[in-house]
Length: 283
Image (cartoon, rainbow, N blue to C red; front, side, top):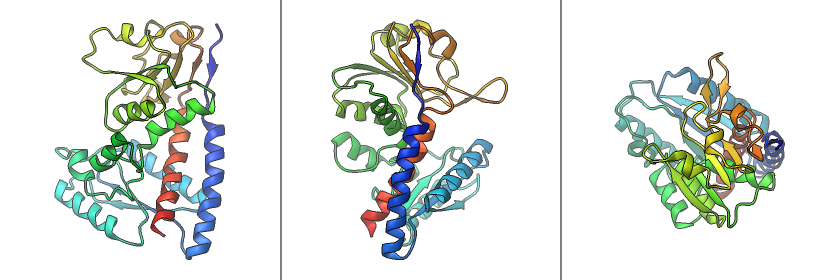
């Protein structure tokens, strides 16, 4: 069997084109561009690289992307205070809290201060609650990207069995909710799953989102399944590799999303679309 690729660049380009037009129209109508505020409280190099990539993406789309660096020793109280202030600031349309956070600071403890209307990456408990209840709100962009990438490539979800490997609040759990909304039957696997290969090889679609390079191999995938790789791990040569051992899956899976170039560009495009949507709603 030939394993086809599920690239995300074409979808991301289409999303960005529409977002650019909406951002320009909004800037003209209200006299200022949509604004995203990135709140950073770390000195992590990978985080710094990602922030710069978001700034470049925003600039290309006519979105203002500013960064507030609170430092790697910021307390939970200080982070909450700034997030609350930004949520109340009419000049800020969208707020995103960059991870990792300082030692001892939990994401749920501070993200609750982000107003759902501005929580464009859907990380707060309030936003996750809206998603679980099927109410309007912003889902985490990475989880949404998995669904949108599957739809773009014509991968059926309704009635299909999807195994999500990973149960984080930023990918696995919200992705399960989004897949249920698409009428998929969802199995969420994690570190305590007794027989992971048995659970995943029973699925029509396998989504790897655990942050462990090469965890998913050919033994985890049934013949003809679709595999979507959300992982972004540093490889032996310093490059980016996914959670899927692509070589062992090749020839067994019907399709596999590449890393990089699969879920990643779609995630960024959706995040920018969320910024413009938030700005349009706030006026």
